[in-house]
Image 1 (tube, rainbow, N blue to C red):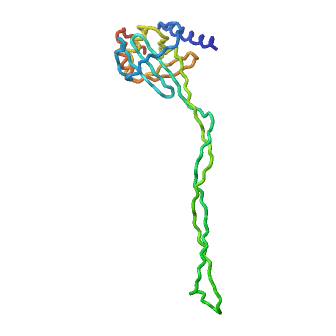
Image 2 (tube, rainbow, N blue to C red; image 1 turned 120 degrees about the vertical axis):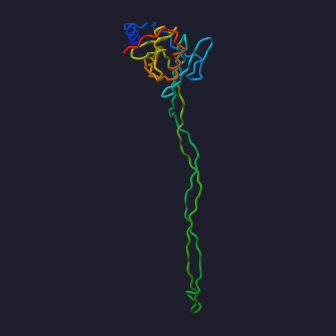
Image 3 (cartoon, rainbow, N blue to C red; image 1 turned 180 degrees about the vertical axis):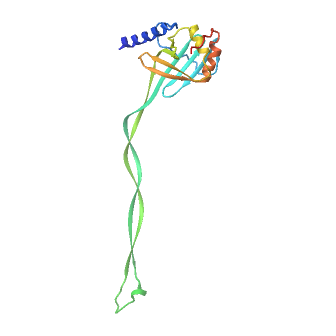
Length: 220
């Protein structure tokens, strides 16, 4: 499996080299720095210009774009049901109560030959009793997985960043982007590909960070 992934990555790098874009050998995973913002605002961090970008759906992507390196962090969070637990609950149960009321109606029946006549009336009432019962509710456990990003691909021209210094060609490409959202592809060490949308304010910041390089002409 590792050989297959390595072959795929090397084939991609080879394709990029064929179109005239310099690329380094596949390196260790790209590690994001401790720089966490403010987002999409250029700051001077340890003597270098940097901008941080964040996108949190469906995977949490944090990226740091500095004049001398690019770092990416990708983490997926999710929950799974891992069991159940008993809980005590309460509910109201209706119950009908009969009340017996013996009423003597002398006006209606009167009294004949010393006999006694009466009538029985029944009244009903609904009352509620509170009872407890045991129910079961799901138990969820939170999980997270960190993806090691070893390659970033940009645009149809397949600019590739695999770590180390940012090449002049890539700086020129980044600094010449229109001020709009842009999609890049992140390749993990496991061979997975994630699409990552970068906000237009971060793209705008690239001009300030990478504008010292000569701008390459657009390819139409």
